[in-house]
Amino acid sequence: MTNALINLKKNKKGFTLVELVVVIAIIGILATILVPRFIGYTDDAREKATISEAKNIRTIADTYYAKNGSWPTVTKSGSTYKVGDNATAFDGVIKDFVSGVALDNNVSLTSDGSFKYTKNSVTAIVDAAGTITH
Image (tube, rainbow, N blue to C red; front, side, top):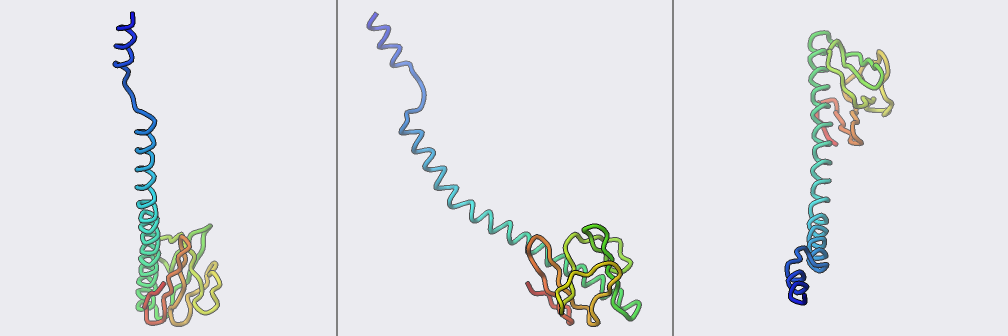
């Protein structure tokens, strides 16, 4: 009978508490290293997306200006903006460059085509020359 108990103890399989604590500590160390990097990548992606959309808006505005001799009208429908007669909708906020006021229905871009575009808490500033900064 004692041999049966000894064999039963030897055949138990599993992790000890020390092994589990070590694994959890390693996972915690990796998380503290990787999470800030991941957050940095998503912030960069948001910034690049906002700048890209601001470039698209400026291209649409420049094309409209070349055809018509005036800057396009911005229309707002719900939370999306359309520039000129272009069908592309932008879900960021297009603001006047000087005053910073959001453009609403049928308001044209400023007289020199400059504006501010905000999306995902990132603002891209487009000046009269078409240079985009953030």
